[in-house]
Amino acid sequence: MSIEAKHKFKPKIVAFCCNWCSYAGADLAGSSRLGYPADVKIIRVPCSCRVNPMFILRAFEKGADGVILCGCHPGDCHYSTGNYYARRRMTLLFSMLDFLGVENGRTRVEWVSAAEGVKFSTTMNEFVEKVASLGENVRLGDLRCRN
Amino acid sequence: MQELVNRAAELLADGSVARVLGWKAGDLPYNPEPAYFKNAEDLEQFVYNGFCGANLSKYMIEASKQSGKTLIFLKPCDTYSFNQLLKEHRVDRDKAWIIGVGCHGKLDIEQIREQGVKGIEQVEEEGDRLKIQTLYGEKELSYQSAMLERCSVCKGKEHKIYDELIGESAETGSGERFGRVEDVEAMSPEAKFAFFRKELSKCIRCNACRNVCPACSCRKCVFDSNQFDSAQKANVDSFEEKMFHIIRAFHVAGRCTDCGECSRVCPQGIPLHLFNRKFIKDIDELYGAYQAGEDTDTKGPLTDFTFEDAEPGIVAERG
Image (cartoon, rainbow over all chains, first blue to last red; front, side, top):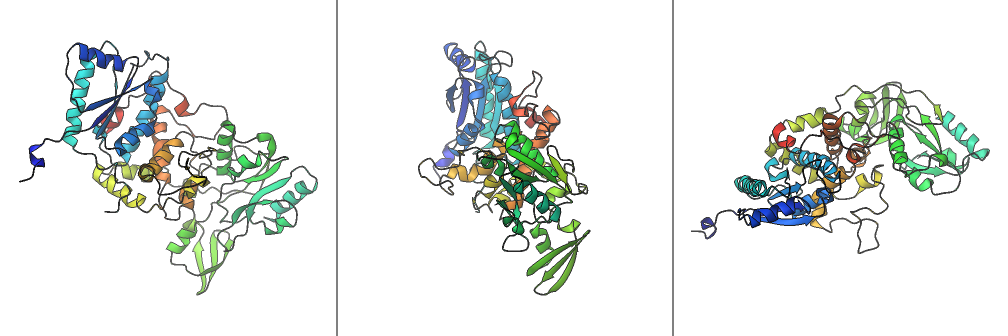
């Protein structure tokens, strides 16, 4: 009998949240006492546009099972246009990961405003559930392994 | 070819250019290499044949820093790369004298070898036939069958930028540019992953694709070591090992002119152009048709946006 069998798979999720909307949205979720799984590790960034596509790959390489990027709604960016650029970059990156055979449920972009504590909480719950159902991320780790 | 040498010698002699950037004969009949020519004597080594696939535009970055003009020979597809470098302010237009050379497709030694030709001693081009002298006798192949993959999806034989044109071109493009990308897209995630793992496992991190790529023109590359004074490194960080090709493709996304040099130089025969073409295909589909290097004044797709752009969720919806 193995010890692991008793433990449910707990995914590691990295959430990049923009300082002005989504991070404040996460705060609101907290102060409104809305729960979201502790598997989500939030990294605060000045703008969703700050997230270099390499950050996402690095998160996967360091063992993340899912990466979510949250920013201000298009049109609401604190820096006017940052999230429009982020939107194009992430679309292309996700498409490339899909092309490489990485399950597309592991990556997500969601626009969460500072007033949307509920949306933050439900998004995180949904995303964690989705990634948990996909299981551990192995594909981004061993693209080069010969087995 | 003699016409090119004569013109180059003429321009060198009257001092209008200080050096010539072209191809010189390599140690084997099928590997001419990019070279500088300073005088008429050097030009005796000059060659221009079917194996001159090398894109010279990247060398213009260094040549732009030297005094005097540089004569550079560009094939039609190379002019796209030159334009892109011009747009990014990496080359100086005033420092270059561009002679557009004709092209009727370039040869791939691997394609010749695949057809069972070994011990190649000499290759002669006669119209649409190739006569190859080998250690085991003479072989004949059709030119078409020995062409680089990129030539079968040629962007056209029109030079996008030049000062003068020498030589005739012949259309070679007949293939489906995104054919192989679509084949991979149609696979299941498991099959895609298996395919890329097989291909990328061949990589030896020689960095040839990066070094040859005209779009990879950063002075300091993210893949260079910041701890040692060596210009290149391989197998240092597991992250780079695994992600090298994805990151490199992303860095050139929207700027890649699809010149196909990465696949041509890969010693392991990895179809690296698939990554770049996937990005080009996505950009065309999502943000409108865009050909990098076609002009020098439009905005690149990743430095631009519209309010109506697709959401990243489209990737999952598309399936």
